[in-house]
Amino acid sequence: MHDDDNDEKENRELKPQLVQWATVEPQRCRQTDANHFEILYAGQWLKVTDQPPSHGLILAATLEACWSRQIYFRVEYFPSYEDDPAEIRVGCIYKTFRYTNEEEGREFIGMIPALLLLEYLERLQDTDSN
Image 1: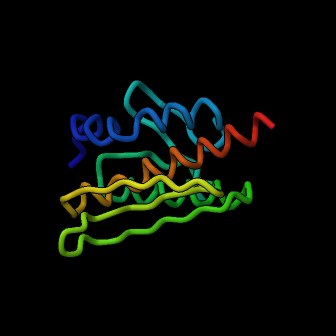
Image 2: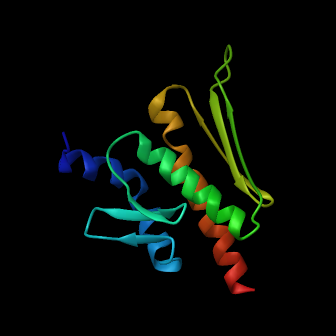
């Protein structure tokens, strides 16, 4: 069953990056209404929804975009260990964004698509400004 309220909740986390992506690269991302987006992946436009596969779609589409523009990327996850919090490292080219959290789980891992897309968009802007 599809729930538009859940769509809004899911998109809120990624919405700023998706809006930016739709603005700077409309051939890969487009906003269909106030809270919904479609992302081009493998030659098909696919809707970002409230379901967990949305994160996979955003990751895959971002990785495909990096590949097509020859932008180096890296995603690393380090689980918490003893007193050290869990950590995600996401980067494109030479810059790596590090995020730590005392808690682990789907919400923490779910940040990877937004972080990777943010990094990709920053590299895209760097490339376009040169």
